[in-house]
Length: 186
Length: 328
Image 1: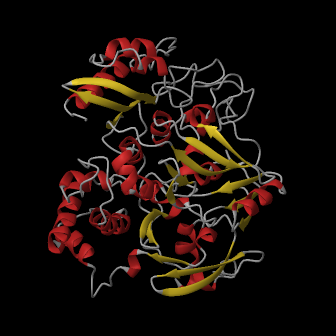
Image 2 (image 1 turned 135 degrees about the vertical axis):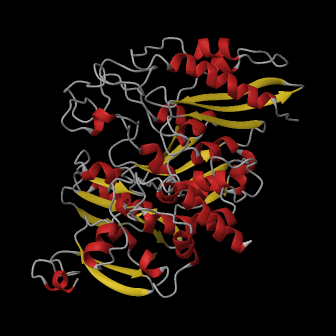
Image 3 (image 1 turned 90 degrees about the vertical axis):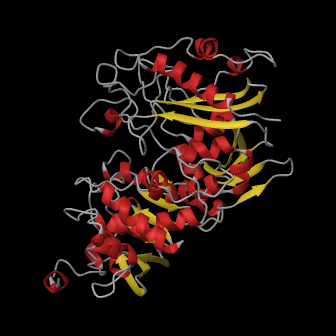
């Protein structure tokens, strides 16, 4: 990490002619000067060295780059960092620590909700938000009556997690992990 | 991605002025389609004007009892709005049938209408495409066309419009409100907003250069049962092969079609008003005669002729679902 940070060609946050951008990431403020082409994903990984957020397809199809922006999940590969001046961003590094895992991280470990682990940060951040979206009453494609509150069923979780692909197909265990956290809340 | 400059506008007037004074400038809202295309250098703006902070992110009631949806209202928020869920269910249903939770959180009402086709030949810069490079030809015509248009297509382009939301807006007779570079506004009926490809498939809407969508308005609620049935190649997170938006009244087990529009069939949402009036009040609507009228003039390819029976069956299934309900 330090070798990257000190490499003369890779001075993070210092690009001539860049757009000054304030990002609050995991409760820490950063001011970066960014080429406008920098996606939020690349700003997190290449400039702030928060490599927990993964680059999978880089075109919004796989969900590995999912982060939480102002409380809502988003594909960080399909948004420009400069569009997020002043925004509050949570990555997997800000969710829990190795010593004090977030309940969703703990449940993924306990239920073996991954194999290779590459999609896991995105899965976990998405899962945290899915439970929030169900609690907030946001409907999904499988919600019955639109005027009733959605329930936290397997079908609802599957549908709402469809933007996170797992090539190892750990889906049954991912559902089990999310169900456990959901059960603990209700 | 090609280099571009960036600025953030605070008002709609500022945004249209900024785009007008910079050749090659584009608006950016959610960015979920534009950035994708910029990475492939299919879209190559020289300057981006960020319209995310124009304050156009509210759903308000209009004087006539309808709704005015700000252009920057996110798809998630529109689908979850209690008034939309209660009175315009077909719109909520259509929105949540599209994309993923992450994308709907970013994608906007105006941007959804402006999204471009997902025709694989439009995306493949090694192939000819009249939409991407006018005059080069259409690779889909002789290529793999299983999810291309069967209605309203041309020799120049057989792409479909990918939006689910737009199909519901077409059924609901929405109006698109815009601001021109000189600051003047106009209203465009959703029926007229998207164009058929003809011999200019690269021109997809009737918007002028630098014209900005500011809102989408819905007329007063029509009541009835609201359904959106989407057939696709996976259970979730895929574009439609065929989609049916239906608003219907149901009395004594008889379905009276009020509004009917289709997705996945053409370069724009497809609605044949005469097909909605085929059955008189009190008769039970049957799928086949309606589908005959909707599909009149269909020109499928060898790969997508399956859409003809699929339209019939999807419509029949949607009418069956409606029949199980009852409206006052």
